[in-house]
Image (cartoon, rainbow, N blue to C red):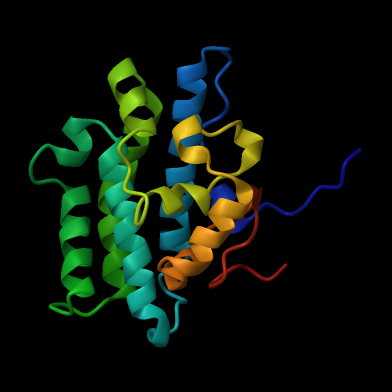
Length: 203
């Protein structure tokens, strides 16, 4: 039997990963791959927020806001863009932290996430119509949004949509040079899961 490992912190929550669907329908499977990238990203924010050193707050806020923008770009209009809601409140607050109009607070970050996690997870599970599947594969900003997918992509889920793949060397070059301080908060490296940098439980 292959060796097993204790589950990584982000594998056990707070938001549950979506199981691979029992279908060969390509678009559905790719939608789930992208959704799980975003779930890992959100879990990585929630887990690490109380443990990130103050000296890393601005990098962490940048990563958090990139995660927020990526969720908004890929999720249903009614959840992500449909007027005032808890997700957009989190995004507005992160934006104010990034521009130093507010100070980052780990407790506030997690508290605001608690308010939208259930609704957003339902969206990941239930909104898999063709429009949303296509939207999840196209139009992501390659500077701030596509890297969120790359650093939270576990190849065990299946293949990324072609438009998001890039080559392994391309991804590595990009992540190490474009806003490099942000992407260390991700959950995967080269398509392989790893433990988060800050706040991981002792093994």
